[in-house]
Image (cartoon, rainbow, N blue to C red; front, side):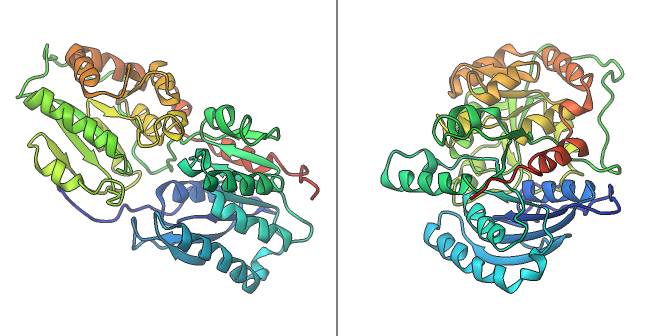
Length: 409
């Protein structure tokens, strides 16, 4: 990989199959067919042997050349931070459903990811007889949903109405139910915790050996052998970028910050300037998922796994895919104590800091020796794969849970 590369993050089609004689017919409504997590989930559904059709939007900020490897109906092109355009796309999508009613017939289960798509999926559900169960999958809770303003209250009312049509929830973090869906939206129905674990096929890179040949470890990090601190994935968190830049300034040549992934320029408009101003920060561009992950995480000593951009709500509640990827390949994570990510990381996945402050992170890195990091790496690689790698059974169980539990409306 070349520093500054801008190629699209690429994905291979499924290599595993789990087809049955009479596959369950699944409709999936997604906000971006080319979004990394959506692609991973679609591969998993196909691996389960489901007959999958997608009704999906597209956004222009990632994987522009990606072509869906599933039966897909393109709805509309939408943009980040454009509520009016997204609302128009939702309304127009109902008309596209009518034009593709043949694809709705015989549906067994519907899954919708995010509120926009849930509204469209509910319209599709009303067109199908018998009415299939509708699952709402939530990987993030947008800051508008927790806003105390008029818009927030209105959106919560809309979501409550749509939740009444749902048979179950899929969440990637238990905090989403504990902090939001149960106390705020009053959800008491079935919930499946389907964490953002790593999805791998049979031909993807294997884990490193948990007990590599013994090598002499340096006592401290130096300019000749700096600590490599990675930030991997979708790079859209301005507070995290600022934190890592400040740590790079504090520790100087004893640390190298390695950035891997697609940059959301609308969220981090100063990304290029901040990285270019520091010799010990390098952006390596987009990468192939999952093929490049083994190399990326083997080159990092530690990774910053905490999301900060919606601190106090979504960022404090979520469990990012970074902690699963990094742990699978033996790279310890860093997070903030008290957050859902921090609680998980403190349970043997790495280390936490008391607050999202550069001084706290720099102090921790000063205390951690290469021997400490190597010991944590060995411990991670000794844990079962299923702690970090998603199984076909987990995905299939989440989809099959609501069958026979369709709410009456």
